[in-house]
Image 1 (cartoon, rainbow, N blue to C red):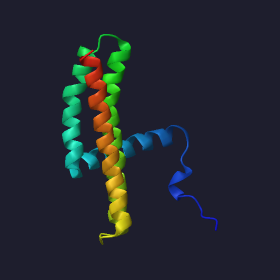
Image 2: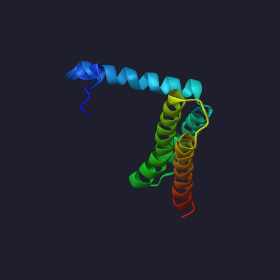
Image 3: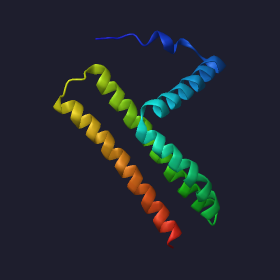
Image 4: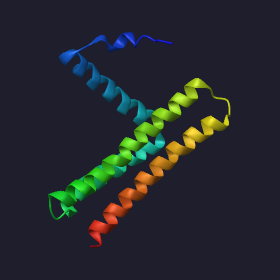
Length: 125
């Protein structure tokens, strides 16, 4: 079955980029307003990103330290999007909804472990 694309996909060029910037800002605001874990990770990033620039001994180390923190934020945003979508579809308890949310949570945990490993390996070297 053929489905038409969203009518909101018609913008191109600078208008599309401008709109995308505003949608992204709205996404950050929504995540910060509604997701406690994201708020905690933002504050962690506010501390760790400058620390990563300071503690890294060269460009590669700085990039790894900072990127590992940003990766946690990215994964948390995606997890929050999955959770919101699941909740939009139904607030009823369902094994597939639980599975989707648990897998998203596992992705966040994995990103946090990766960040800890990167920081540990670089700083304890």
